[in-house]
Image (cartoon, rainbow, N blue to C red):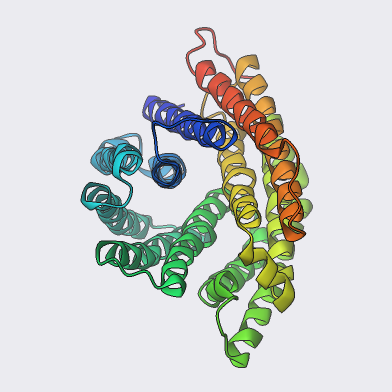
Amino acid sequence: MSLFLRRWLSISFLNLLIVASLGVILRYKIAFFFPYLQQKFLLDSHSHFAFTGWITQTLMVLLVHYLSLKYGDQVFKKYRWLLCGNLVAAYGMLISFAIEGYAIISISFSTLSILVSYFFALCYWRDLDKINEKKISHFWFKASLLFSIISSIGAFCLAYMMVNKISHQNWYLSAIYFFLHFQYNGWFFFAGTGLLVSRLETIQTTLKPIKIAFILFSTTCFPAYFLSVLWLPIPRIIFCLIIACVIAQLAGWLIMVKVFFTNRLYISREFSKYGKLLLLLSGIAFSIKLLLQSGSVHPALSQLSYGFRPIIIGYLHLVLLAVTSIFIIGFITSFYMIPINKVLITGIYIFVSGVIINEVLLMIQGVGALSYTSIPGINILLLVAALILFTGICIMFISRFKINAGSN
């Protein structure tokens, strides 16, 4: 496996470890007294670094790796400055948000990360077009790049309101959810699916259904944004469009599941044992996510879900940890992009256990919030879950330096 790829993925796992460290501190501050950092500032630092330093950085590396299969390892040298630029922006946000929250320095680094994403999208689009053989995965990749750019509109609106002290609650939340939606339902989802599709499109029978699934997900991504703002007054015509989007996305996912099931023998042969398991868990989490967003169409449920912070936090952790992070680790281990050894597998088991425990506890806390019931010791338990996540990630990171690492 490419030395460039392994080095960049080592940085990604280090960034994930930092994200987990911040998560532990945040949970500790809720459960106990820790006066040195402001909770809101630290939360902003945690979320921005998770998006930019862990998920975006790793997806960029994996997308460049896809190009390296066509052009050779020299393509990593071409994208080195963009990858480094994204890292600088990520670490700049990590530090500045923790110290000052939304202010001139943190907004400057946020802007830098957006500019890097623009240049990455432009360069990557051009390099895809240079590949003579056009693939369905290229449609997924290009859609992901477009949605990444579109998501920045929400970030710029949010920064404008912060700088100008505009405190209109609906505008503020609409901007946040715009950014989040086009990041995790756009950039993250389409880039990850494109990577997975790139490993399946050699099978001719998969081409047509995967193309249909792409059409369903890509055409519904824009109107599906309104699923994130159902608490706003929405015209009936838009509400009907939302219902159509929900049905179309469920249909698209069923098509993808059928593709995976039909080609299970090929997947079993080409994907590693541990990678298949992680991708399956990610797929189950994504199914739960689709069912939850389908249920949120009901007016009463939407008011409840968007009115209670524990439910929102639980949903975001479901998407970012259970769906996206487990998928990324699963994809990396499926094709031995890092050495697979017992230490790594142990770390993965602990990490996945932490994700499941964390989601169960957040679900319990969310259900309790609906009836205004305080769950005894829930903050201590969530701190324990954060420590389990941190331990698993720490072991995975340490495994990168195991001298006699081998492949299973």
